[in-house]
Length: 401
Ligand SMILES: *Cc1c(COP(=O)(O)O)cnc(C)c1O
Image (cartoon, rainbow, N blue to C red; front, side):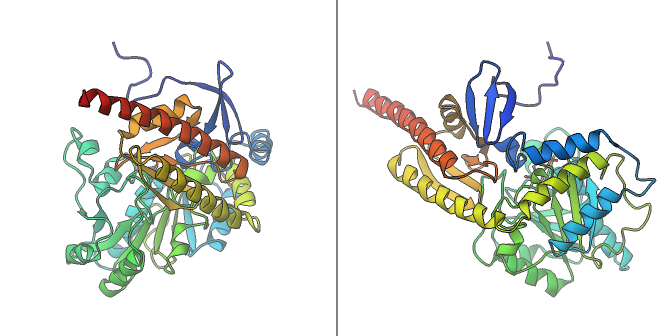
């Protein structure tokens, strides 16, 4: 019999009652160090006082007005995002997939408005993830997620991630854009070779294409820069953000240059909930913290320290872990045991992680953590790996006998 809650997720048998900073507390009182972070959403941890205050203050005033009217909180948040990035203009949505839908539509409309409606195709990359709508599934081209949902939306040409030559070869007369994650998050925190984004920027410029970045996971300070493209020395034409932007309140954003957004005039796109005062007020509070002087410096330092400690754990458990990778506090551990088993072993030690592609688990702690939480996480991961290594060793002895 199907449960009332549609069973589309393989959930761990755990539920939480409340959260405090980097900690989640289960109904039985057990405390978990939350390095799953709502999959890079709880950027400032749980129950951050500034976010709670912003939400409560707005809740007493006004929750929602439609986009039939001006929304000053949205105008101000858009101006702040413009100020903090390459962009000239912002559309607000409610999720990453919706931000990506707007990014795809903006790119297609740009070429239509330029007299080239035939340039609707995008070069995209294997192992990427852009969301679960029909367009974003087609963009990523993951067969497993497309299976059974009818013909995928036309217009996306996947090539190997990190392969500039393949990207170049995929460009044809109908290509209008290149869409890429600066680091593939769901794909397993796969970091492309140095110069990859720069190369894609050059390819875009040489061929009259728009460069579209999916920073839904990498954005809003996750990698130690406000946006991950800041590491690369190039800027995109269009960018999707979401996850960390609301710190747990659903909000997405599509950022674009004036040129790239030239087709997005009144009536071309919309969202009933997009940019409503509740979401905007919480996102303002997130930016108040993340854009504060010194905050991103601390994220970078904390990330480096964490990665160094994790490298030590990888060395200590060579049968369990293969590699640590990532940038800032977007960190992946490639496992040599099934990644689900590693995540489960960590969970038993009270450490929550998020499994990802390429047999990896992600560590996505709140950006506010310090050395104490890192030490705690490393100790728990070490204990989990020791148990898994012991199981492997006893299996090996069993096989030898
Ligand atoms: C999570 C994610 C999305 C989809 O976001 P939703 O809010 O689940 O729709 C899109 N792109 C990337 C890179 C993501 O990590």
